Image (cartoon, rainbow, N blue to C red):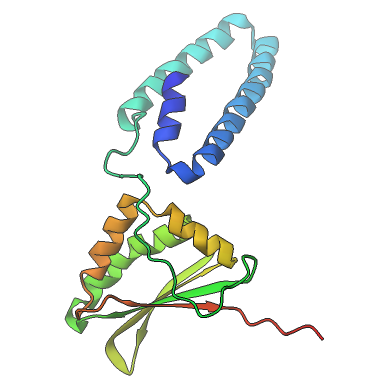
Length: 201
């Protein structure tokens, strides 16, 4: 049980750790309840001996599965908070609940490197979706083959500010790998847009 608890905590970043542990405990306790009903039914209809034999076989199968799926964290991921995203430059401070928020990042890419850049951006897209975006995409400009625009949308301005706190060292490495394709001395241009709701009368 201690190993399961430690593995659960090590496998997720700190900002989502409480939710991951809650889900783990919910599944564990639900499994205990469902297992009790299942083995009770097996014992009642097939007898105690057969139920114990089935449980023993299940344990052996579980041990065999551990060879292929060992219980360990992903040592390749550094989930330490990075906080490398700069604060947005604003003329008007949005209300925390304003949204949805569209973030656009413009890259200048050598067209010959487009395929490698798109592959590198897949990891960035997974990061955006995991950290709170409900939509993310990468678009190219047919009028300018070297211009690519990444977009992602989050529910509110407050949620976007939380994204700034959620990025990890591994996220920064994935972003650096993609931004290495960007040409020019200036970094990619980042723009923020908040949905324009119809003013109330």
